[in-house]
Each structure stands twice: as structure tokens, then as C-alpha cells.
Image (tube, rainbow, N blue to C red):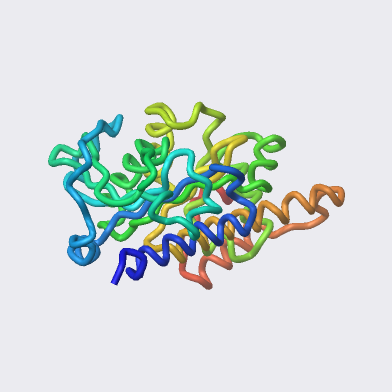
Length: 272
């Protein structure tokens, strides 16, 4: 058995490959992380090494102390992940304070974890607390239609939530909380990590203006499906506006009927 035989590794690699096939990962764009389950950690233990030295995360995540994550590498091309996973991915463990990490598998040709590591880990910590540990995947991709929307819509949670909900009936069911929106920020630092975290307290999807999407989910299928649903809705939005704009749409009363039928709670602030 090898590292590549574990189901979480296969799911991780499949998600990256599917995202590249969708056109969301030009060059080294985008990143992905997965918080290992306790059983995963025990299973992979024979394949890990202790040669890595601890390096600062750039953020403190004490609620993740001692946990293990599979992450994409900084500057690594996502299209190469299915071809060379050991060279493009890293398995990292956090120290007992949740302030430093070390590589225990992967990046065999050198490198470091994604430059968005502080953002990923800070939001893993939030989602672990918020979902009782259920959410384990965080995914960032450069979804082109959603990015296009950020050049024409006001950068507010309400404007984007309503626009996306109206473009496809399943959207209020898939992301009933709506979506959060950040204005453009420099990627990779504390500021965008903290700002994203504030929105992740309310949503599972955050729009990074002129940049892409940031999503959280319980597993690879759920997280990829969430990203895919948002981007498909954005594609419909782009097509509708290219054809001259809406002539009719789903109404607020329609949304309320949908919420009752599917037993989801839609925030009132998006229905006035």
C-alpha cells in the first residue's frame, strides 16, 4: 500500500483534477486543504517522516493544535497534482500551540505549503468550531464567471446572494445562508484571512472580488459541489446579462415557498 491508496488522498486528487478540467486553475491558481480524521492519521503514520523542521504558520490556530492537514503546495501547478502528487502536495502537522507547522510527507522536490495557508487554517478553525468538527475541506479556485460578476455588481452579500439565488432554483437549497463578499484584498496575508474568517462565521461561501471563490464543506464532494453550483449560477447570470438582462425572475414569495418545501431557513435580509 502507498499514500496514494488512501481514500482521502484519492478524493483530494480527484477534486483538484475536476477543478482544473473546469478551467478554475490556470497555472498555479487556487489551493485546497483537508483536515485529516483521526483514523486517517493513524493509517498514514507508517508513511510519514520526522525530518521536517517547524516553521511559523503566520497565524495562531490553537483549536487545531496537533492536527494534520493535506494541502497543495505554493507555486505548484494544479494540473500536475494527479501526475505528481508527492511533488505538489504536502501533509503537515501543527505543533502543540497551533502556531507552527512541519512537513511530514510530500513536496519531494522542495517547496512549501500554499501561500494561503494562514487563511485556510484560520478558517478551518472557525468551521471546526461552528460545525462541531463536521467541515474538513476548504477550497479556493479562480472561477471565471463569478469573477466577472464582481466587476458589475455592487460588492455586497445581498446583491450577490440574490443574483445567484435567482439564476438557478437549487441555489437557495444548496447555500441557504447566502454568500459573503469581500472587496479586493492582497492574497496570502493576515488581513484577508481575518476578513474571510468574519464572513465564514455566517456563510460557507465567500466571494473574493476580482479573484475567485473560497468554500468550506464536510467532504470533497460537498465542497466541490458547492463551488460548482455557485459558478454555474454565475455563468447563467453572465449569459442572461449578455442577452439583455432579466425580463422575469424567481420572486421573494417563490423563495419562501421553496424554503418551506425543502425545509431550509433563508435569511430574511435577503428576502425583502
